[in-house]
Structure formats: structure tokens, C-alpha cells
Length: 68
Image (cartoon, rainbow, N blue to C red; front, side, top):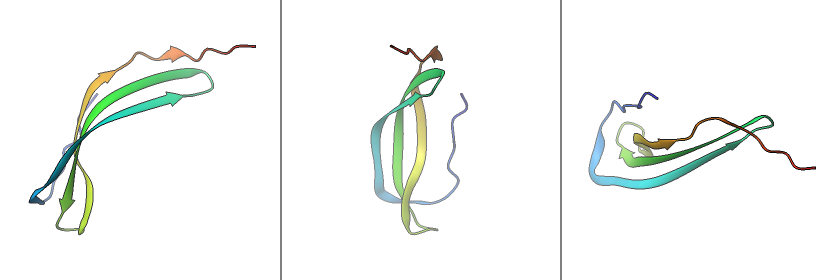
């Protein structure tokens, strides 16, 4: 999976890192992803945005289990 790269100015000292879990449960498949996100204050837009993303783990795509 390709990593996103942010192109812009982030104010020094305004960068925070978070762990993220994404769970996609669809009607036929299920997948999970663990990521590290960098949230920074972007001077051009004057708001916080995701400026760095690293996928730590990406599961295989599995069939969604259904139970009657």
C-alpha cells in the first residue's frame, strides 16, 4: 500500500501522533488496518490535518461471516 506524503508547511511544535484502527465490515468482505497518523497544524489552511500516515498492519481480505 502506498504511503501518502503531505506537501506543505506545518508549524513547529504543532505535530501530534495518534494510533488509528480502521475496520471495514461489508456485506461480503471484512478487513482491518492499524495505522500511525501525524496530525499537524497547516499554516496555508489554518487548520489541523493529517500530514503523515504509516500503515502498521493491513489484514488480508476475509469473507464476512454471517450467522442465522
